[in-house]
Image 1: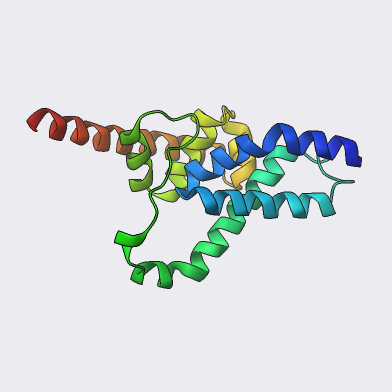
Image 2: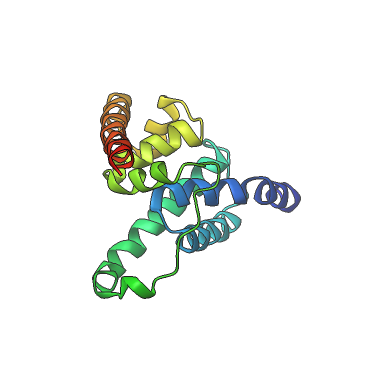
Length: 164
């Protein structure tokens, strides 16, 4: 990929990737930082980018790994942060229902990632398996369990709303 192709790739996919990583992490500024860092790394490998698969998938996977690494380093400080002073998070781009965003935050990260990649990114199971490094059956199981968990969480939200 030459410089012009990389610029075009960046322009076409940055916002979409930020939305996808945000849906996986639940933190917009963290998603923006991780995607930007992933693009920086992609720039360094732009000559080989896309030869062995999807360039966008490479950047998304790199951004996800960066987010996980950052989360591991900072989870202790997050635990003690004053939540009352935390800024309000904007909604996930492309997801209009606040209950869905809240429910996504409640399910396990591997299920959330599979659901976002499948339903928000519109990736097939085989591509998700390759991108996440697990078997297709594992992706299908995560999708099934994630949907069941989301359904239970969203059903509970509807019951609370009806009772109020």
